[in-house]
Amino acid sequence: MATMVIAGCGNNLEDVSGVTKGELSGVWQGGNGSSLALKENMKFTAKRLNTSYTEGSGVKVIAEEVVEGTGEWISGDYSPGTTVDLYFTRGGVATLTAASLNGDTVLWAWVGDGDAAILRKKN
Image (tube, rainbow, N blue to C red; front, side):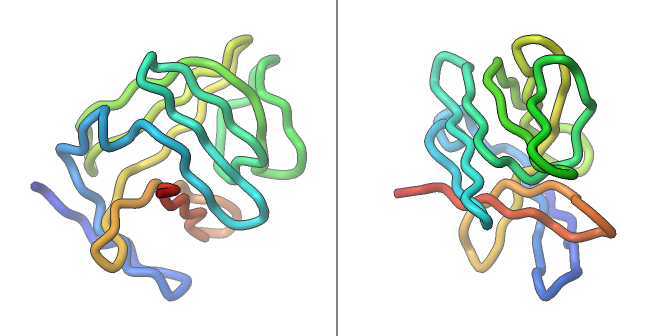
């Protein structure tokens, strides 16, 4: 498992690779009511998702770097580790990266001035 430490904002995230589709599938929750449901059939639903994104007509922008929508997701191991690409139904893309935080796998993305928006999997 390759790791890269991301330090900032009090979080020490270690990017990880080798995260499986089964480990990624499920509901992920973050701050400010954000959630991301990654389904086994490779579909997703994002609500109030804090992330940098490539805007398209299918991305509903709620506020700066906060989006909602549905679409399909894929994952793969790229530098720096396992990434999840969200392809919104009518266009637009957002990318999250898997990381280890205090022993738990999380998904994160850069937002704002270098802050990390973190999603934790709901049990």
